[in-house]
Length: 328
Image (cartoon, rainbow, N blue to C red; front, side):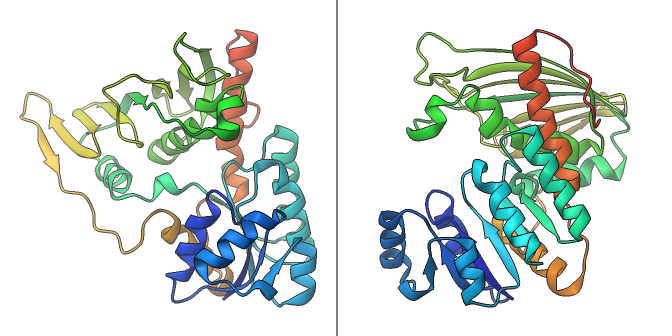
């Protein structure tokens, strides 16, 4: 399977490595609008300069391709996605699906009307930690989940666009945790309320801390607390989780999974073994979906619930109101 990668900066390096390590997916071409970035990646990854194009249209006109990997900024996703899908070429795009609700819906509508696959790279689902939690909950021994508490605290100094975003924690990071909530609970939120703030010591211009409450359609109540300007005692990137269940508790602390049945001792659960993780898992799922017709989990039609979760949280921040999702 031959793919065109759009975007060689930032996360583009990770996808270059991921595809290069795959035995099934190979590069047909690359797209990068910034000459300096293109030059740097050509040198770093020994790319053929003749295969680096200034636009997806130019790349598609020059080389045959079975798929597009979109690692451009979110504002370019609609243009890249439409160009690829109009050409009948499936897309695997970095999250978020789109920067606005209208663009997200437009991409879903285009995928649905053309019948062309459009996947979103929600890679946090595909770690041994979260796959282990999924298996523990699905096994049923802990009983039904009643409530979930999630804590996430990090203090990264990224520089660049994240530090000038209005809601960097929620839009760029918590989208992973919100997607994990949907994945682990097999449900979608039906009522959302949130409050954001920015501590005096924050190096972010926008609100880098938040608390969110979400009630899900299956009756589970979720509480989320997080910050991207934590001054110590950081959590793992997955966050720390507590699932209060009918027959006990399941927790994730520092990427270790524990169970405790009612009145019993705490037991650490061995993590599942995965042949592929994160981006490698998603790339292989994309490959199987395109070449074998296997269903993919994070198609845009499903991911619309995750990105709208983010938009609804921001709406609650700005309005001070409880939000009832339009597609929940």
